[in-house]
Image (tube, rainbow, N blue to C red; front, side, top):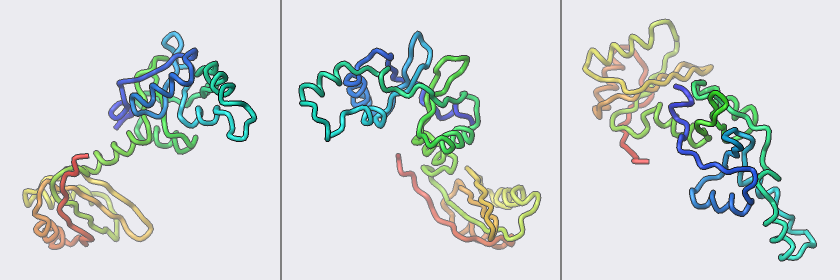
Length: 217
């Protein structure tokens, strides 16, 4: 899966000359926490709630309320925006976005294609992607099996075992640990006991098999 599959395409942006107060109002209006900054349709920066907070005068300042408001009214996005912005291409792997965010300790990446801003992807978008990958919001059965001796073709055999009993796999995730390999499968059926029995009879160790219900998130 690529960044394009999960990025936000409906963008709210600002220009460098907009006042900080106006940027804050825009964030509140659209319930967002950061704004890409564009100049002549080119990405030149990023303004976030955290950056704005850092730009605010300290509580220990000797300035009067009038002086603080006057100062903030004169402060523009260009005065405090992040100018060196990490970006990513829309066709990059979702894992590339996660790695870049983790490496740079950030929660957002503007998505740029041919020097044009085409989207934005945040850590919340990544969370949504994970929920979709694991079919979290689907009816069916979540079954986890433990494989002590991993080998080629194991996934094909597990899938064939379920298919032979008319069970359809929605998603499948493999988690390899030091102790064992765990295969977590979302099956499009609520017959959790039958699914567990089928896999057990085929020689697999079933750790868990529970019915899942949509959470309508």
